[in-house]
Amino acid sequence: MTNGNPQIGGQPILIVPEGTFRSKGKDAQTNNIAAARTVADTVRTTLGPKGMDKMLVDSIGDVTITNDGATILDEMQIEHPAAKMMVEIAKTQDEEVGDGTTTAVVLSGELLKKAGELLEQDIHPTVITRGYRMAKFKALKILDEIASGIELKDEKALEQIANTAITGKSAEKASKELSQIAVAAVKKVAETSEGKTNIDTDNIKLEKKPGASMNETQLIEGIVIDKEVVHAGMPKTIENAKIALIDSALEIKDLESDAKISINSPEKMQAFMAEEEKMIKDIVDRVKNSGATAVFCQKGIDDTAQHYLANMGILAARRVKKSDMEALAKATGAKIVSNLKELSKDDLGFCGLVAERKISGDEMIFVEKCKQPKAVTILIRGGTEHVVDEVERAMEDAVKGIASALELGKIVPGGGATEIEVAMELRKYADGLKGREQLAVNAFADAMEVIPRSLAENAGLDPIDKIANLRSSHDGRQKRTGLNVFTGKIEDMQAAGVIEPLKIKLQAIQSAAEAAEMILRIDDMISAGGKESAGPPGMPPGGMPPGMGGMM
Image 1 (spheres, rainbow, N blue to C red):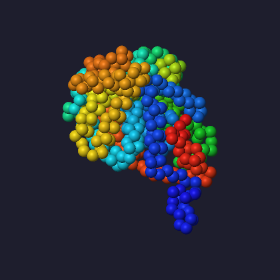
Image 2 (image 1 turned 90 degrees about the horizontal axis):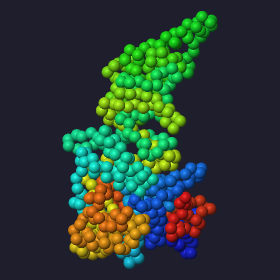
Image 3 (image 1 turned 180 degrees about the vertical axis):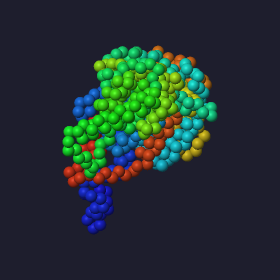
Image 4 (image 1 turned 30 degrees about the vertical axis):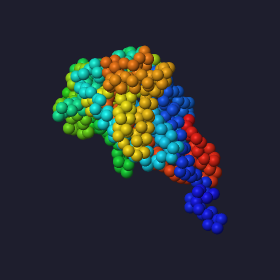
């Protein structure tokens, strides 16, 4: 096997191991584009309020039902190297802004499709990538120009952002209540400095429990911990609680591995046990003397210590996660103490109520009614495990969407309005260019229209008619008009409350364009393999298919 290597005197020269697969030139580009487009087509039907869901079954039979782009691509077992780059787009979008993952992947797939058409016309990949880069920077500039401002006090607009993120998912039935909860949670944890709003979404804890309607999802002004009170004799409810957070064990440390204690009589044994008990009593007394009425310990609590704490009327929980400890500190104002000897009343936090409640058959401790909590919990409910999981994904999109909007302080209309406007302005920009880059910029503009086209298709509307109507509307300088998928009419999206954070669109275009550029620049794929396989991982023998292998 020559793997495309030269021959001297009829003798092939092998420079890579036998069994290595190699795809060159147009073949490599065609295969990569086909693989990436297959991924985009997979999630395209989930786009928008009328998008459909996917059922994903893993190797052990666990089922996930979702229309969240990042989740779908994460669950799919994708093998093709170029297709994996599409998964990276979704991951980046999800980590950066939390929503718009499907938009980013679909846009990248369409950019590659249009690039494939240009390659067929013998336009060089370097020319296409240069044109795409020019179009990307122009698109980002256009987006910034059409964006309008938003602030923390604009509650109605923030709720509309959350509602846009939730609509189309299974949680849509309770979108009004969930949107209000998302806004209230963000407002609780938001911090303003130098006129800029900062929101750390990690301070909004999502705790999910099936067994009730999704309308019963609630915001807890504090933290909910999936733990039970450690001893049956302890109080289950404490009002106006003073909270101690301890990350050392409330027990006697074991001896070093090479240390020994020699006991040769019952009296010595009894004295040893009495001394050990006294030491534990001293530890508990320190907690009591600090004034704490509720203790959350990151490590273990000895049985004897539990007994003494119960006798003193102190509520305690053990083996609390580090993330929960940090959230409790932010919610109650308590300091996490490592050395019990240094525990004092100044280290304690406060909350109006600590209570153990049974939720869906499991005990949970609610630390609520905090004065000014900088960490809160959204307790997510739903009829089944699958419903709860999807509501959690919807809430995550809503919370991160609000945070993204406030981060830049700008929003854009949804419903395909933004994409149509960008496409129209890019075509005007292309008219002023000379050379073949003009073709690439026009291709980029055409690709932008895949979003409103997909919205129309997923809603069962005629995409050709709707795109024509949208273009006509935007030609008449109505920059905010988009497609109302429920009525099929072309409307002012901002007036209809269909708005999205500017950051989502900026990130989607940036990620999609850069991934498309990278895939287009590949003209040689060399994939190492054993002698048994004649193709890369996930590919059938004989090379890559026109689509992609190894997906599910």
